[in-house]
Length: 359
Ligand code: SF4
Image 1 (cartoon, rainbow, N blue to C red):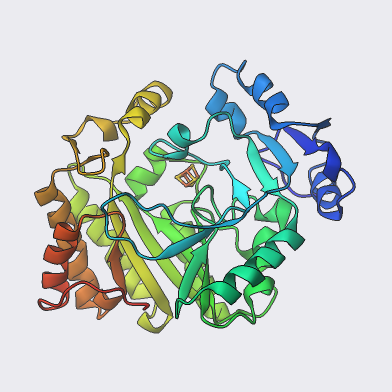
Image 2: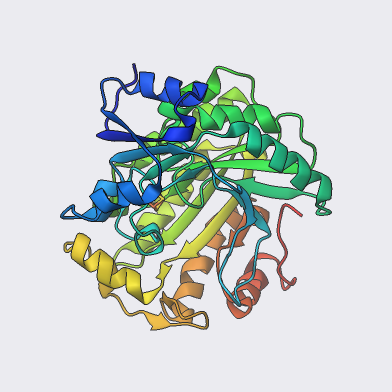
């Protein structure tokens, strides 16, 4: 039995009640109560009654099937895309970040684990056979944390084995946890990248509830590197506050002193951005958070962002540090405009037009 700090109740799609993975997950979570349901709406009807339905949805697990797993990352209309693909194997996340876009994106979505792994295997085979991209990046961290439920589901280990022999495709597993023990019992795979979202200790403590500390994340990344995995980091969202320059600088320097450039696959930078509706939800759920009170402007895609000069200043400051460590070629900006990309690229790549390090 695993230590279960998240889940209070389990719902199972009745049609999958005899699936071996369902049985395994239920046995790992014993004695958590289990109920069979025919439809997601039955769970949503219960979630709707909670005082904080979003918080409640993070404590209820739904074991079901997924109809389609693989899709292109939606990025943001008009932003420079990075060609990422996502696998929707788990939906929602047991952590509770004040800035999490899923609060506005999901409506009463319980923590969901798709147990029809065979279907994913077939879909992936067909997808890879039909795609013409030379090197493809794909990951599970878009609609949840890739590893937060790993001890319960084993999905990341399954994916690592599934991708192990796939040429020209890089699987990224992205997390804010330190839950990598089970991934270190098997050999690493050249095309699997373990990734951590990083922030300053101040932001982690105040805004990323339930996540691992900065030290724990960096130590986990070091262990992954020692084991032979490539690693990646996402400074996203970067939050502007008095002292940001010093504190983000220290996080970058501290990281680059510990992670050898040869093991660093890529690093993304992305400042805070969100659709207006998230601010209303988050102000209610996290009244002590101050991240929504800085100057934010509506940008080309309708999202709120810091003004462009500030965003550029932040990227350039962090870019300088990566450049000093010889790693500026691993950097890319997430959901940024072509103008900001261009200005940032001038600094980092001596006037070259922007390009991605991994294509
Ligand atoms: S870890 Fe990611 S998915 Fe989970 S709550 Fe935080 S931002 Fe959302």
